Image 1 (tube, rainbow, N blue to C red):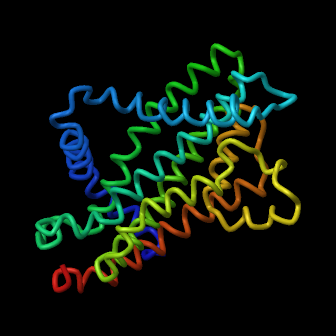
Image 2 (image 1 turned 90 degrees about the vertical axis):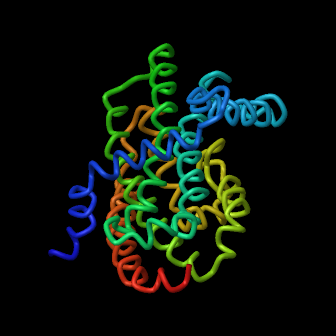
Length: 265
């Protein structure tokens, strides 16, 4: 029981240190930028515009349940968590290698290095969610189910932290991981149901959706926010399992690997 609660206790114990270093990461990221934090708004909106142009005006995708504007919001509901996850991958995979001084600093827990990368990447999702709730309010689409995005978001963070603990540890020994991150993100973007629903996938290909963890999170966001319905245990149970499973296993993995980090960086 102590082992299963260890990663939660670690983050709670160092919550203030984690908060300070996460804010510092955000300041460094936008240091010297003319627009600064405005990029948190522009970044998702630029991606949304690209999706809207491709799927609405070029492919002319139409839903019986939605107008073109509502379809764009449906895309946005899936795009925001994806952008947050992809940014976590981009900054999290090389995080241990890029912070040699912190790795060799015995006062700073190594596990917090990838963690703060994931938390700083949530800025995109925070701003995105504010925009989504604003749009849904204007469209009259807000329902009590909309509030369930909070626990889904928490499990998404747990899953992402656990995954980044694993891949950032492996990246210490296999540096190719950080070099293929952009390819991984592009692949995940194509196979994740951001601009399409599972019902649009041919029956023989639907089982492959279950392999992609992002499928469950993106579908949950879209159903809770835009469709205004409970996703069901077929979606929520995997989300809970992925969140707790990766978080606990990822902590065990990085705890075992960190003893060799200093000698390999």
